[in-house]
Length: 123
Image 1 (cartoon, rainbow, N blue to C red):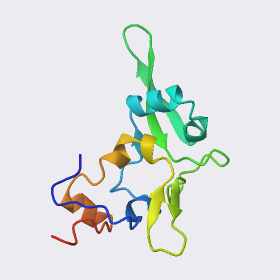
Image 2: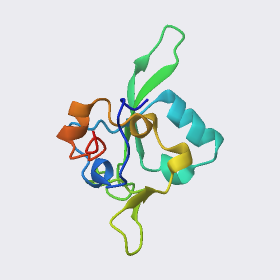
Image 3: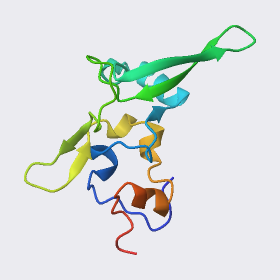
Image 4: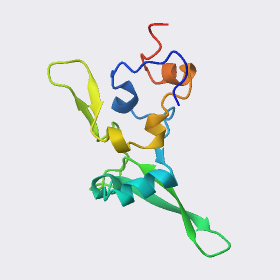
């Protein structure tokens, strides 16, 4: 849920430069959604990191997202970000199924400022 007074300007800052201030990980729910939707195109950009088994022997994972499937390296910008033609605005090509970390960005005004987000400019 976005902080009060936040309004996305579609500037793309949150997706153009993925940084330490912006966590790039997915939740179990994100992975379940992409699997149920058959979104192999998204899942191929996820690194499944084993974190251990529970008492029942089920393996649990952490999910690092936006890992280039060809190189195995983190990408600098979100692979799903597209610039609108002839505009200084961006859109998300996976808007309907984007990960919770994206849906919940920014966590606070301070978080937005650390990432160059302009969503609080009109305050």
